[in-house]
Length: 356
Figure 1 (cartoon, one colour):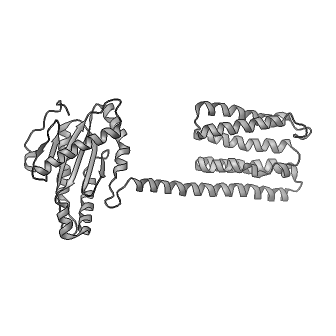
Figure 2 (cartoon, helix red, strand yellow; figure 1 turned 180 degrees about the vertical axis):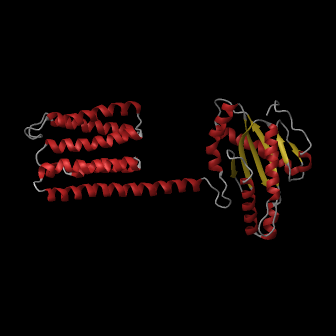
Figure 3 (cartoon, rainbow, N blue to C red; figure 1 turned 45 degrees about the vertical axis):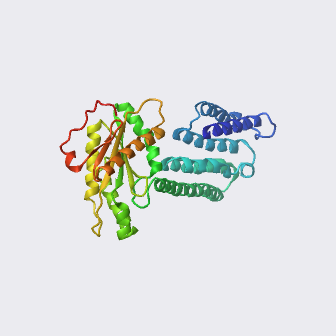
């Protein structure tokens, strides 16, 4: 949409400028008409690819900013009394566009061009070099100072947006990701699994007897336990995995695995990390973990498939609770299978060729 609006502005501006060639007394006598007509024709020409491709790259934006400088210079050199009818304030638009959309070196180039254009445009209007220098300094200084202010404001706005976006993805207590980020990452994981021919694994972790801990030691102790668990899990998961807090003491780990054996090993590492976490007051906790796998297929919606997968992992987690807690349960087929910490080192995993 932005490119289309810019294309429309270029077309309208170029068309209005071309009309000026047909109206008497617009150009001063003796002014070469091509100096005025050339940038107007460039406006019309530049509007076409923008309207067709509907995309303005940084290089195109830089070129359009310089074209705006050129248009002002052509107008100032083609009319009588440019100080009155073509003031350097016409350069505000390209200066601010450069400050908001371009990088620092492109902005620096445009600031130098702005100063040069002001000098060339005002030169014929002043006989005194001192007065000319003052006018150019005031005009170019105002334009470039305003552009620098916009550039600084842009940087602050961008940092604020990044911070806001980051905070919107994080759980404030643990620093882990939240449900929103988990959903946003689903398409990436589904694409990766389809591309590599692998599977997406969801692991539901629920801390054992967490309510009893809160009742016995207070919510501050429970919060400390959650932070300790989050730190331990954060150091255990792989960089590409997504670890999110989805409820009070419920956590979800989402990642891509080659098959059941890798998923089981990863879940056991998570269980061990939770069991090994400890707060400064010495409080510890264990976790029951449920695993479910899926092989993404073309045409399915990743967010919907994500919650179906998490529901299966949640069912497996409840099986781990029923089998004694502090263990991993897998949901490969219609029924979940729980593995205790002692069994996990000795029981073989089901073959990866089975249906997930």
